[in-house]
Length: 463
Image: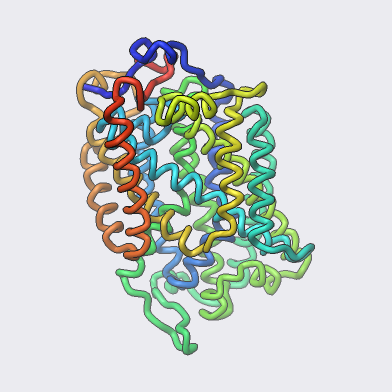
């Protein structure tokens, strides 16, 4: 029996809950979703940290993470076509695994959606350096505020804006790939050598255990493909287009990220340069300062692009949670308000402004909590996918993943192991937040189960 309540079953005040307008197809959805993956800014902001810890094993780790994400994408595609809701993961998990599980995945997704944009935004200053020197935190906060203003606009307008920016970041990634391959210093066998420059200048060997621990960040590298699920209420024909958007985005983003990573690994002059992760300096050394400046500016635009799409995605999550009555009544009323362009404007501000504040928090702590949260969220989604063919859902028209139930079972085992290898401090931070969320559930939501956390599916998407 599902815990999801359809519109006719909710309390009178929510008899006609606000719904988003279906205005984009697969192309628009893929552009927005690719922009949320933000392959170029991920390549230039997140991947350098992996180079620092994994060296030549970085490409292998990202490749393994991308393969794992295929199974994750299958789960998202099946669940997203069964439950096409702006609530994304929490709507899917609530429907399949119960309201408490859905609440916990909502909290994990909220951690991710609040942390990832400032993590990316703080990289802007490094890539504006050829023109102007800015404080990273101030630049990141500025990007977040700009993205918030753009997020208040119509979704179709944002699809075009982000599409133009996306072309520029793909060009930047392509330039890096071409230059890296053209200046190769080592053979492809080095990709499996698992070496990193040690602190004393000598070469150290990267252990298999370190690769496993790095998989949490590798999963984060392509994490944005799940945005297609958040946009499912605004996609035309979601039961067909959600799966197409998810799988196309994962395939394209994996290529855009992985090919330049391989090129950088082969083209770095030595292990110290690779471990340093200063991709902009490598591009300048391979070409000239003009090309380096062009690539840096493209990356800066890519980061702004990512901020816009992430704010759009994240505001939809908060909007859906208010529509589904996760909060006290005044808060629900505020977060479910729609503006003149059809966007949830209060929820957009509630995501963007705190995101600007998070730009002043320690970056390493943000990375660690995000990696644990993404892995935990995927784990709960895989569990929901394992339960997706029970009851009437078994006969609902939807995209169905191949190799079910082996695919989600394998994913559950692998993700649980990856979680067990994460740093204790990051596990404790994420666990503490999850414990507080469980307490909120026990003291506030559960006693009001008839009027709170009523996860709804848009009427035009119900079976």
